[in-house]
Amino acid sequence: MSSLSLTGRRQVLADLVPGALVRDLTLVAGGAVLTGAAAQLVIPLPGTPVPMTGQTFAALLVGATLGMRRGAASLLLYLLVGAVGVPWFQGATSGLSGASAGYIVGFVFAGALVGALARRGGDRTPLRMAGTMALGNVVIYAFGVPWLMAAAHYDFATAFGKGVVPFLIGDLLKIVVAAGVLPLAWAAVSRLRKQD
Image (cartoon, rainbow, N blue to C red; front, side, top):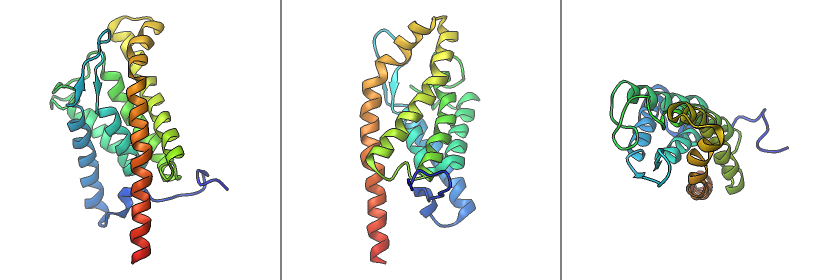
């Protein structure tokens, strides 16, 4: 049977940290801070009001390492704290207005999906991790593109051309990195457990 079976419940990396409540609160806050820090890596792209940032990669990584509930909670914390004025969205901005806000909303749902898939083994091999990250990106775009359409008064084709196409190469690179890093982390954990 596939390790992505809906009946299988596996650990995510965060489950390996002891002390449930303190661990969970610390990891949720840490995931939000990581996403906020990664958002400060901003690469403006010509022809689009949405810049390339490190926050998409961080959001998906948070979901994969923390699991569905903690990942979604972490990214919801990131969203809410930024919405009320903490300047940790891309380029030290805050608030939920502008062309990029829909992508940030999408992080919460993408983090939950990626976390659920990781719990089912979606982070154990490079191929599964690539698929998991690709699905997470699709969810982010599913929120980001309609928001971009409304914020910038674009039709769907224009919003897709400005809000998805310029980011595909960067997304592919992020997927490749994640497909290598998380399975390697699990391999290291497996080796450490065998040594105990």
